[in-house]
Image 1 (spheres, one colour):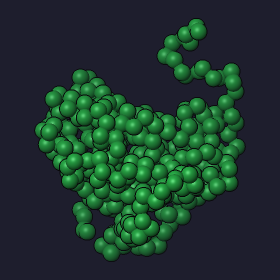
Image 2 (image 1 turned 135 degrees about the vertical axis):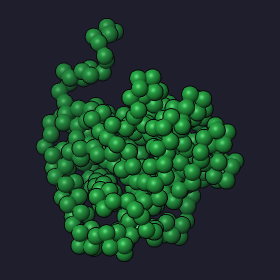
Image 3 (image 1 turned 60 degrees about the vertical axis):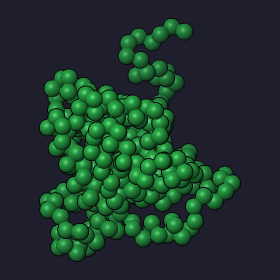
Image 4 (image 1 turned 180 degrees about the vertical axis):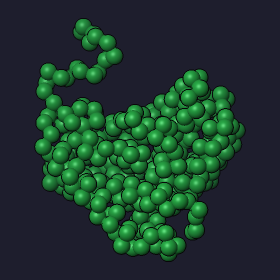
Length: 330
């Protein structure tokens, strides 16, 4: 697939995708060594968040979900602070109090994530409302899964965003399964993006393994949102290569997907697809692409060491930053 995307944007996409991949692989290694608890990996879905976030500005906002490392890293999060948070250390984004599912950095437009399914959808919609009321002209995007698309909060937010023509981009990461339940068993329409018709907004179906396709779809949604044309629903067809969360493979009692299915999706690894596109079109050499991967790996290793050396928060800090004013008396 050829593209008129500038080289710096393409290389930024590759860099952020490698940051996510190496970050997630490091988490897998550390989980196996008993250094951290269970986390939800984003491996296989990197093109969705990166393609979307690179099409946005730092001043635009995103909200994520329980599969919570890919989204902030795609938006430009600090790897050291993200890793320290997963370790529960004081140098983390939430000073070690939020953990894997709560990484926020307003300086680059990260509103945060939540383990409550679909709960980030109204949050991002609320941010879009603030943009419109305050005349700020920033766009607010939210990432949610195929399971979350069936939650009432998701439909309420999409309806309201359309009624008020809010600058919201709803990005459904359809990775085929809500834990172990196929979306085909819970969604009545052929594609989740078909539901956009009910809310009078564009519904766009995108190859979620293709970072360039995600970039272009999101860029158009951003254009519409900034021009006051309202929200867009983007459905990215993608796949998680690993289990729902680390450790789940040890406790699930039934096989819900065949190895052949996983192997078929792995043949469309988003990192390999983007690298091949960049090399085949002459944008950069394989050596340049490899150098980006190596640099990202080194950055992740440095972040892991930083997290290990960061102190745990003192118990006297337990209630700090938990309330906007004085701590309530219990």
